[in-house]
View 1 (cartoon, rainbow, N blue to C red):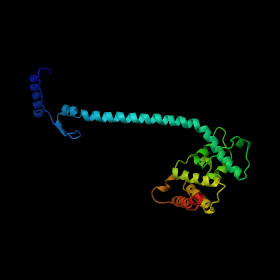
View 2 (cartoon, rainbow, N blue to C red):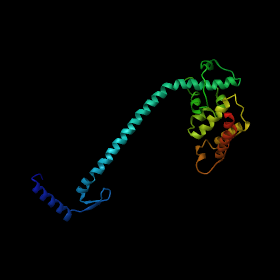
View 3 (tube, helix red, strand yellow):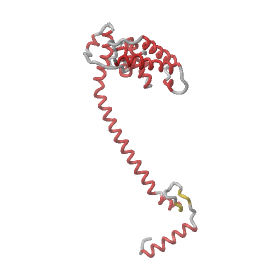
Length: 230
């Protein structure tokens, strides 16, 4: 009802009296401050809180959209650099073959003199199912312990770190490394394969793979990494 101030005050008192005396009242436990009222009143009282939640949600969605835009740009940048990175990874395998007296094919020669530092099991495994895939599977296995098809399905970061660490050391012909390092890597490979490539060896109760993983890393830290720094 709209009218003069006095009429509106009287009408409001009548509505309030009716609500108190006749309507069923409820506690608005989720409304701050704590509110008592009928259904309609509680709905109105909760409106500011609901608006605040909505504003927070909208702001959060805006941040997510900004992150998505940033990620899309990142994907575009990575896509543009993918072919160059493939050439680099091809060259890392060629360098190992050349250093170890392996025959270099005509297709290998086209990768030039790029230098790739460090192993990358996932990237290198993709070279074996590219449009023109590599066929020197044994070289890949010497570096990473497994056939490329096996590495395609490995996503466990700690496992990939072991494979990459071994390949990095294996390809560095300028540094002598204790045979124990390679023995422990082979041991990890066997245990991981016998576990049917179960990536859960760092969760729950320790397994034979857990032990092999720890021994390999300790050997690298103590007998390889420190020596390479000198």
